[in-house]
Image (cartoon, rainbow, N blue to C red; front, side, top):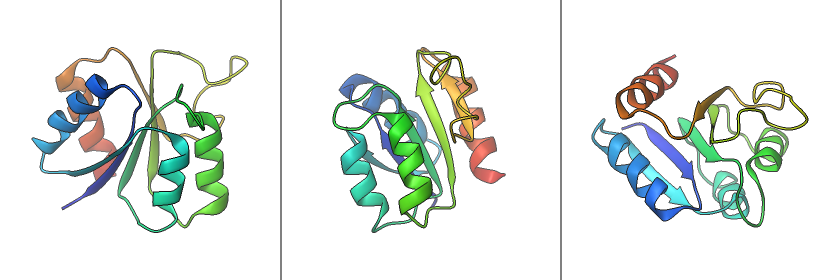
Length: 120
């Protein structure tokens, strides 16, 4: 079973994404901030990481940089945000993400996108 780490501080958003992806037979691990995610990522490997951008303790931008520098993760990292640019007008790909999903998203499109990314 493919392992996905979801980093999302909004409980409703987290439950929605978890429910969608569990129906696709993925195993979902959820944390609410970048610091907890980084601690977990230093001990466990995942097939995909989905992260919000605006979170307490460590935002998604710092998290992606630290994942690339401090862990052995080789999986894709996807930003999920209502913001359309990462920082100073840069795209999410320019700051280290492999993709981007804009909130709010359509369930079918989100599911198809995750399936395509995880199988690539």
